[in-house]
Length: 259
Image (cartoon, rainbow, N blue to C red; front, side, top):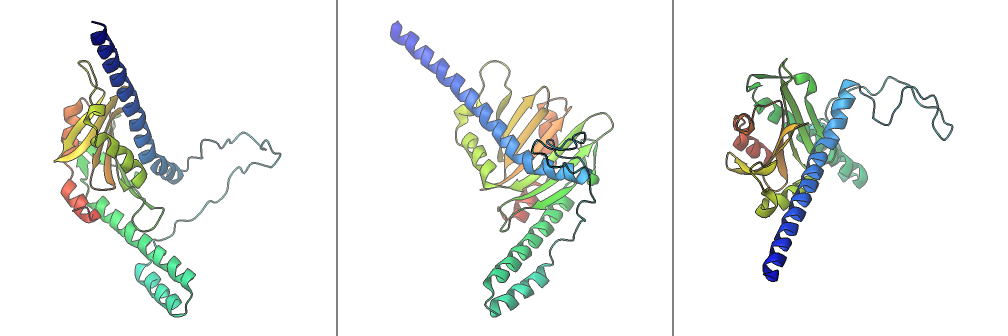
């Protein structure tokens, strides 16, 4: 009898630990997906950073606090052909530092073109929600397709909104792999689950629900590419899945080179 009780206690403790661990990893995964994109959206909207205060005239070090400025003007993406030509010229002159820089700029230009191509492929309306192109973001912070994010928002006038992020980053993709490779971590006890594994058009995915945030659906598109749907005020899981399935997942994967 004692052995049975010990076994039950162990199973309960193991399940609780797995659930807590998976919830923590899911939060890290969502934070990684949103961190960079949120900064770009706030910057585009003119929202100051959280640690910036408009009321303070000086910092704790006695230095004045900047209260405003003209900011930076928008610049066109790098001209791929021009950067490639510059790289070739620099390489011929054995100026390898400039050659590398020009190649990086050329690759960044390709990434931005790719991101814009993916944006054009996304549906203009989803579940009666209209696209808000003012919030579109295509961002490349590194070169070699290692940190490209594509961000778009659909919404209506009744507080219903869907935010989609398509991107590639090894860090949060690695966190997602922990879920996809361990089905036991994704099953919650009881009649109601707040997160679980699903599939979007055959692709492995994770879905979570929180009362304060709504539904979050994350699908793997390959080794490091992912797509994230954040759905606010959707009626149920089925409505979220129907919206996600309206996307051309195979087309996105093909553009990303994941097929």
